Length: 203
Image (cartoon, rainbow, N blue to C red; front, side, top):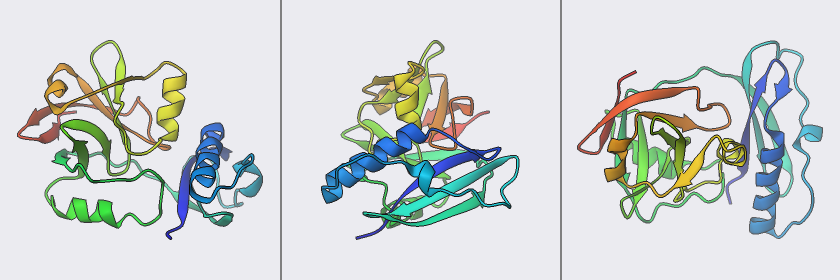
């Protein structure tokens, strides 16, 4: 079995959203391995001396125990086009390091930067993020997600994001798109237009 992993935002030598990362690791251990108990990632992560001010990505690899903790520089990537792909059998319930299924999906669309997977016409996730859409008043995210996202959970709990069943045909009512994950928040969003199952980023 592939190792699992958590990506944790480290900014100015502070680890972010640990409550939700701990919750997901605990849920994963219970559901995959039958291991019960509290999880405290902070006690297992030592921030290296070379990490300074600024933004970094912390990656924790684990199965029934933590096997590796790594830190990386981080730069935001901005997509220009996103393909919508109907793929009813695609599954990614747990955050495995083996992401070959995502890579193979991206290879089907070499001219686009990312793919949003739909199942029975309903939006799920992009290849590296949950998705959120702004209607001019509120942000919404699909009820039919693939992965329990930590940032998604935080935003829902704080009523900054709301769940809704979102079909491809519903996209015309939204004004902005955000790709949310541990490193990306709702403040990084894009105007977009949809044509023939291809989302084009306008700004």
